[in-house]
Image 1 (spheres, rainbow, N blue to C red):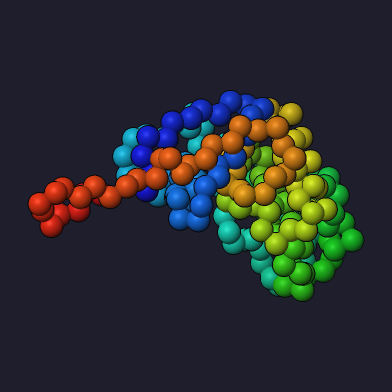
Image 2 (image 1 turned 135 degrees about the horizontal axis):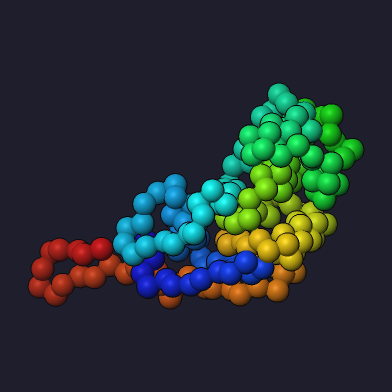
Length: 189
């Protein structure tokens, strides 16, 4: 749980959330995404339909090909063209391969490629570079820069430098601390 976190993100901006494991990065992202209620305070998102969340799971269908996975997500979000997305994530040569046969890094790139085909402007990303090599991190950084240049915004939990010009918020000082009253056997969280 976090206490006292307060920030705003405007179109064209990205914020990277850092801090040790367990500090609350994932909880904060999930709360912003509306996947869990806030413990306290409020989250203001002008258009919840503009958000997309990429968590730790890649969210791909193993039996479908790379292209079929992207077409599925594109159609769910009213999009049709995936060709630029295949190129941006270096997936063109893998388009017909079943997703279940991909390496961990290729699966991660495919999972992240879903972001682009949603057409959503607010990206909430929880450790997006897990399983990615340096080249793939660079590719992803380029995709995020184009997203921001097009008026999108991103909130990213990460320990990896993606080469982005972003505001970094270390959540360590906002970690909730247990308060113990002297002389009592009560703990207030």
